[in-house]
Length: 401
Image 1 (tube, helix red, strand yellow):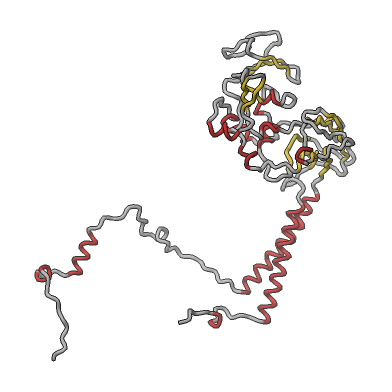
Image 2 (cartoon, rainbow, N blue to C red; image 1 turned 180 degrees about the horizontal axis):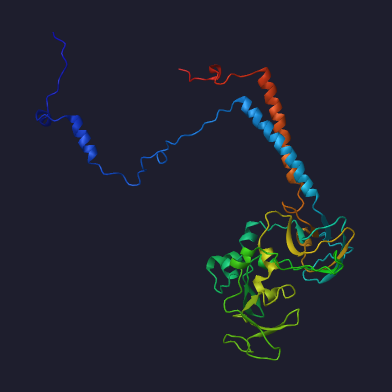
């Protein structure tokens, strides 16, 4: 019997002389291009040339040596820069309620007056920053951080349901049987640090009394884009005996007279004032009705801190002082800390190119540098005594059959 292969019968198209391969090619040509198909380029098709470094032991050891040699001197330089910063601090309320502390209070808005005296142990170059430091207060708590209405801080008088909910329970209050809306609402705005710090004594190098400046302490972007007085708010300087000095429809009956610390008279108008409690009404001692939410102390407070121990800028002195200079600050204590077992500290400090005093940064650099040198020494000894051939097949593991 002959061994022959079976040949299937030819189809109609095969009988007509058509090649099946040509038929498939013709069908592929008829397919339309797919949507969002990447272009046929080296970048789009990931055919770019790339460098795949091989971590040869010699290069690793050299890299660790270079890092150690660079990091250690940089760390010592950072420590020297930090040590050049002059910092004076004094805690004025430990939060224990100890009556022996002149500034300690146990009730809010106590108006406890006390004096803090500082003596410069070194020459201090300007600007001399003045901070209040709070300990054990968690501004980064999510409920606290979210309790605000940014639209309200931009001047809008209406609230969305979400913003109203975020501000609870400090959104609306009952006052004399009437529902009062807080503006601004929320936990951050209504826990404003309201101790009053005043520089009452101090002499600069020119022999003139020093002054603590309180303008320019907030971020310029916050002032320009995040805080505005309520819409329809009006204020205008005028004669204390004059009437109708506002340019709105308001008259003397719904405008309020205010005399600033410089003795200048103003009239101002807040919309819906009979059903709204504004910031200057919540904190009349520290917030001027002319500034409201644009007050820089308030804006500094509203930028919440990331850690429970933080500092916020209260003011600065723009003149240098010499060693031995005495400065006296008067504190009007109103902000309580004993309820959350915190503390309040007044800090005077100069600055460097990296900010305030921070010796930890230099120590981190030194620590990393020492670690790199020790690692380089360890790998160097190992490579000298027990070298490993690069791509040695003895270290390759294959899947067992």
